[in-house]
Image 1: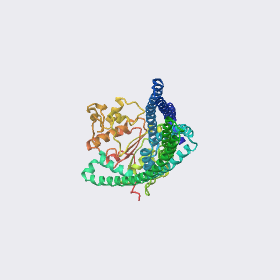
Image 2: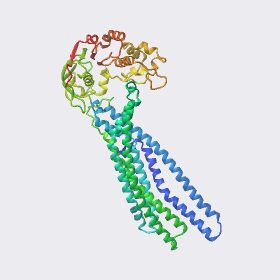
Image 3: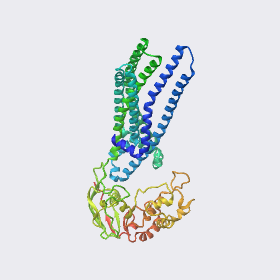
Image 4: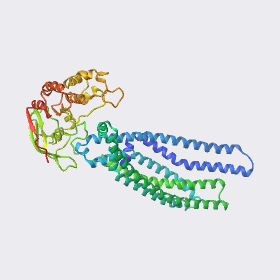
Length: 565
């Protein structure tokens, strides 16, 4: 809980302090309102007994009561606004922490199934929970103040009254704690099925799956799987809800019986003539309010404990160990400087790699050297590990065994910022960014200002300048189909955009091209082959390709051989 409160108060100390002050005010208000009501009743009863109307005392009592009610309403509204503001800021900070952590993850961690469970729970269950801790704590403080003041009122009736209030509230609180724990455990058990349900929904709703879902008639299959899981999850929750309602109903019966007994004592004291009408009203309402406050207080303590358990999901995610030499993905933190220019080149020494949860080695005992300025072709059958090797050479994966050296230094010792400056790539599964054409290309090196000349030069090298120039807004046209006014491109055109993005970083000494022309037509491919030599000039290039024309450009061909069994 200490960690959660530190997160909240360091996010916005001023707002958190304002919320704290308002909580104190809200804690005092219920008892002040009861006191004002007692004064009003006593003044009224005095005038009824005297059979005379004195307007001044009535007006004074009414004014006090009205002022307190107005103050109560204003502080309630202010507290809600301040809590909403603080909630927004804390939520924003949590998402920044989640995104920052995600950017620091090695790809091998992202592909781990247990990581996916932790991430799912962190995002779906815990992103708003820190505020629940704050609200529970605020409510506890508020209710403690109210309970202490009400206790002082009830002690004047009898010393045992506060103890009785706590005693009759304990069974219901114990039941609520048990119910909350049961729900938490159920939600953890349902994580995998919730992820599967979300996956089936994604298959049915996103455009990447749309063609095959319609062509192969897969809609009903995945819809039925989604519905079955949805029904199973709902039935499990409803069964637990029903059990919890029965328990809580029993607790309410016990609590109500206790309140009725205490109210009977107040009535008996009034009949004996020990209480005024105002005191009778005060004690009646104090018992009722003290009972609800005691239940609320103990319930919030239980909620605070349970919410803290839920927050394990968020902190489990944030505490995942990052086995890297840099702390941020875009800033060196003690890492070595990438050699510029490279003098010895790249050496892959006995490298093997196995994906998480996989028993098969995607790459096994691979060794070779690449001299600076060489163009190397990686060849081999599908599944021989060519794309995996490219990702290892980019520093995106770490070898399971062996090492990758740049001028004799491990690639893992360089900062991510240095790797980004010196390495460029187009991957087989290149990404489509729904931004402007200009920005799509500039994303290849965001540290360099996107001048029209540099962007068009990269586009021209990739054979896409003419296409982009003819778009409605030229290079300022948004690509894709997610936003209004966008222009959708064909797969081959998107690949040329991705090529331009990889060419855009002129500082890169190494460029990796994984099937760079797989989606291109013959004419475009022919034109690109002619410009590749210019693009690769003074660069070390590694090309993954099945094309004989592309392989012929290579100074060295590395055959990964047969698929590893």
